Length: 257
Image (tube, one colour):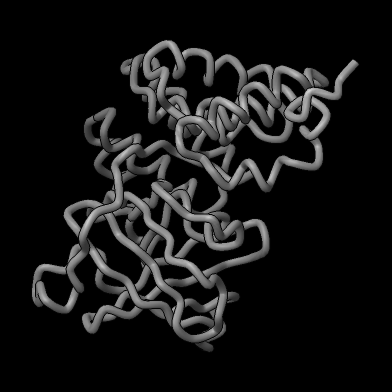
């Protein structure tokens, strides 16, 4: 289950990454494990990003990207993955890069892009963090290691670190959502619990409503699930209106007896 996190900025004017030569925060190669296999993104300094599905050294999609502050837009030019631009908030540091949805109606790009990415030398990065944590346990380093694990699809390892981090930082809404994502598909009650706490802290967190909806559906609470999806849509997760139409139509169309 794809881990999703929240962002509520509005899309405004962008500048091309090339215009900020030498200060491109995402430039370089990033990798992650998805439900369908490994993927690499290579952000070039000319405002283009190459997508390599399978990390087989073949470019499958070439996309233009533009950055404005901490938001990034993608506009596919070659490979025709998605016809319309997608906009995301990004966060990056020496260990990972993350993308949170702002506005995108391309389901495939959302699934491929959202969540955490790490650098190709992730084994070295994990070793570095583990050594620092061994020397002095610091919650922020444990969280960084958890997010590398998330990028690699290692949910169990990520959850272990997130449990430790959240013991000391129980009101970190984003970390709670990260942990909720690690609970799929075996702990739906845990997903609901983490999402409930997140919603208490951040009622406008659309990803908490979305993930709780997924969990409620799996638990058999279909009407509650569709109510959660509706709230997520109202908060800006527009693609759900299409993605969940089939299973929520009887509730959304008022035909439920």
